[in-house]
Every structure is written in structure tokens, then in C-alpha cells.
Image (cartoon, rainbow, N blue to C red):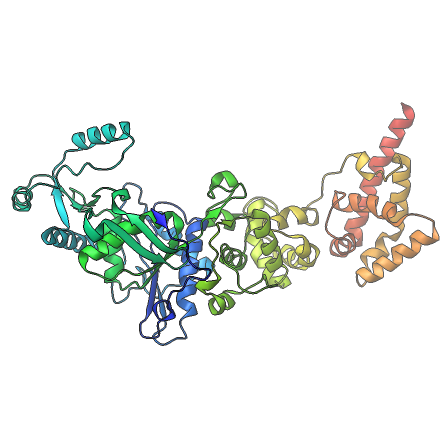
Length: 528
């Protein structure tokens, strides 16, 4: 392969990529052999956005879903359902697909086998493909021999069989496959195409997979045949896919030319990498959308972040709704360099979207995770009316500190059940001791009722600041033992809001419990 360096701005005629004379048709064509991966979601999203970005133009754009389910050994219907559930959650809808139909269906490859056989035989009749009668044992021997001399692929053993003889053998029922005849001579010995992002590409056909199988002996098509036939029959005008598929493009171009068809335009998207510069995988963390969803990621945040993996839109703007992305997306805004998936950055986006939610909406989003965590009396137990009301009222305490929805339960546990009493040393302020901690907590107890009954944080803060100044006490030293007694931790949601939600009686009971424990510790220290 040779890459010709493109100019600073790849000069593809606008009428080809954004034609007003034809409908733009692109597609997402996953193989349902696993959960939806973040890289696949990025590919689907960019195709969706590209189709939507031209929807206001003459003829508009159409985004198509096609299931490439020819790998039956790994196919599972649950993965199909996962695909539908994932995109429903993300809010991405296709214009044509297996579940909604369309003018060029069926949109499932296993329902299109007659088409693939028809076109494989057509290539054979044209002399652009041939029957191969090599046994699996011979192919394995060839593979081993070629690997020993650092070569790969088929040795073209059956390419020279007389076509008439080959046709008679195939008609007689002799097991065979159909292989594509890769051009090796003349002008066709080199395959050239232009990629929107990478520019002019040139491949020597001698470097292309030698005469790959198009139709297997069991009548099943290979990926490459089904992909090309389907894209042509479905009128796909633009193929946006990850750069890992770049090496397959010369083979696809060869097939288009063998059929006499016009290839679609290609744009190979930058890869999605981990922070170590390697392809994103489970070693980096979550990769499937299900995992991100289980962690409490919002669909809007995931869409926003994924849309920026390998693309940029406006200087100084980070937050985009799906509608805004549809309006702003352009292939000119794609980057050639690999995109780095940063989990901390996704958490930042998620936190930003969480902070946009009102109390009721945020509570409803957090509720399933809190129920699963057992916040309301045990795993799976739903809240009663009083608990649900308290949960909604608690949202302002944690909204600014949430990174993911799953964190709500652990942050609010002290509101729904008595927290464990922390070790005595947790109550001790800097340069203090147990006796000092107990004395400070007794001081705080004097203020607890008015703090819990204050109209808001400002009133409560003014009250305790005034008390601390009049009594010569550092505000932090006064607050810390009180926070530990009430919430069970040094770090917690805002204390004043917590006191208002717990109420004075529950708060006083916790302080009294802590005072009793500290008194016992002080007596033990004195006796020793």
C-alpha cells in the first residue's frame, strides 16, 4: 500500500459528498456477536449525524441499520436485542432497518442468501471469479507452507482450471467455493481510491488478500461479498467506518469494478484508543454501552462525549445536545489522529449533565441504582412514600458532587439508616484529643436544634459562625465532630442541609450516641 499525502484540505468536490441531486444514504452494519462497543457506537453516531446533517438539503439523508449476521457460530439473538435497547436508550433512530422495514429490505443478511449466490455466480460467468475445489486438508497444508516462507493467503491453485470444466464439476455436485479473481496485470493491477479523510490511496493488488472466498461451500457468503452486494442494492452512497477496515477497501473496490458498479464514497474514521495509545479494550476499563449504563452514565453525556472522539465543532464549547450535533456535524470537522478515550473526561461530562437535572428528574434517574444498592432497607426494596420524598429532597445535597448516578446511594446512606459509629479518632480535630473532641461536640449539640430548624444554609452558617467567634473556637473544629456524629464520616454531603432533612430529634439522638461513646473512651483512657 502507498499513501499519497493529501493536500492540507482534501479537495473532494462538494457535489460528490453533499450532493443536492441525490439522497445521501449511509448505514451502520454491525455483526450481532457481542454487546455494543463504544467504538461501534461512535461509528453509528457519526453515520447518523452525517445523514441528519444533510437532511435539510434537497433529497436529504437516510440512516440505515443492517444486521450482518452471517457469522452464525457467534450469533446470538440477545445481542440483537441489546443493539435495539442500546440505541433506544441513546435516542438514535434509523430511517430503515430490520425492525421498521424499508424499501430495500430485508435488512438482515441471513434473509438475503439468494442474492449473494446470484451475484457470486454472475462474477463467475463474467470471468471475474472462479470455482475452487481445494479440500480443507489441502488449504491447511498450503497455509502452513506459505507461513513458513512468510507469505499468507491462497496459492490460486484452482485459478487456472478451464471455466467450462469447473462449471461441469460444480454442477455435478463436487464440493467447491467461489473465489474472487484479483486482477494482477495491466492497469487493474493497482487499486486506487480516494478517502475523504486520508486522501488518495493506492494499493498494489499483489498486496491484497489472494483470491479470497466469496461464497463458501455451504452456500454462505463471506463478509466481503455480502457487504458489497448489500451496500450496492441498498443504494449506500457513503461508507463511514473505522480505519481498521481500511485494508479491506481495496478488495471492496475490486469487487465493485468486477460487477461494473460505482463504489460508494469512503471515509475511514480515526481509531478510538486508550490513554496508553493502544486500541480501546477491556484492559482500559468499561467498553460496552451496557457497562457505562450500569455505572450510572447518562445517555446524553455518553452521546456528547463520543461525538467528540475524533471530531471538533466549536471553539470554547463542550456541551452539545443531540439536536445541536445534528446541526453542526460535518466531515470537515473530523480529525485524522486517533481519538483518546478518557474515562475521567467522560465522568466530567456526566457530572455536567447531572447538574442540569431538576430534583425530581435526577431522583428518578438515581432511584433504580439506589434500589439495587439496598438504600431503602435491602437490595431490590422499593422506597415507601416517605423515603421517596426524602430521596427527592436530598438531591440538592449531592447534585454538585455526583460523577455517576450509582454514587447517590453511598452518599445518602446516612439519611435512610443509622450510620455505624466511627472510631473515636475520627472526632478529634487537629492538635486535639478525645477530651477536646467531646467538649466541642457538646458545644455543637447546643446549636443543633436551631441549625436543624434554620430556614436555609445562610441562616445556619451565620448562626454557627457567630457562636464560634463569641466563644473563640475555630469554625472547622466546631463543625467537624458534629459532622462525624450526624453523618458517620468526615467527608459527607453538606451538614446544614443534612440536619434539616434528618430533623432535630434524629440529629440529637446521633450526637448523644456519639457523646456517650466518647465519654466511655475518655473514662477508659483515664483508668489506664
